[in-house]
Length: 231
Ligand SMILES: Nc1ncnc2c1ncn2[C@@H]1O[C@H](COP(=O)(O)OP(=O)(O)OP(=O)(O)O)[C@@H](O)[C@H]1O
Image (cartoon, rainbow, N blue to C red):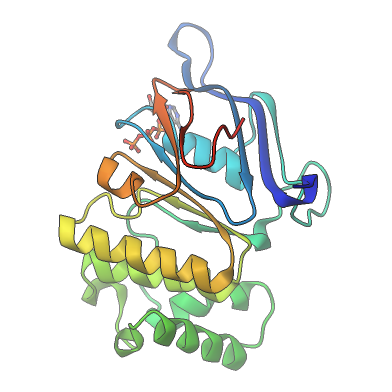
């Protein structure tokens, strides 16, 4: 295993919101690595800091202490996150209401400068691969919660990232729909050959992934899983 296999490397990474007596330490020094091919769950109760940790790993937020780097991904500079190589499935609705499913799925490519027709063909292929081609021309308001999350996963698939970070992707769904969304997420990641990190409060979801890290009150607890310590 070389450093190039480490896609994201958090070293004592911390995040505090606010200052003084009202400051909230969302994440205490977290040391956490994701390697190529890893399937990792970060499991913990609401408010334990999972979303904040995921945002640090995605480079969407900067640590207020420690550091996060992406040695195995191509970054424009040591300070900036390789956003095109990281796909994020956000908690809750993240589709643009005025765009239909194909347009939403194609959006990351269009924003990256891919011509619209080509982007839409790739989006259609992702929807087909995930078994939801029939939703292509619906608007987000015409989708169920589970369908919307599958479209968000198709959007990540279209982007072809090497690392997929999913924040409570099944959090608001019933058991059967949640299981199906996780199935779709894992098959998308398998198609990409990407690494996956899922945050969840649901131990049934966490058990689907080979590596499990528990989070409690902003701290990552000792690692569990079949692949040994990750830090
Ligand atoms: N932008 C922010 N400003 C101030 N406090 C915040 C902010 N974001 C998160 N927090 C606080 O940081 C702590 C961790 O929040 P976070 O959303 O990371 O936890 P979580 O485990 O993902 O919870 P949930 O599952 O409910 O989303 C909480 O106390 C929360 O209120």
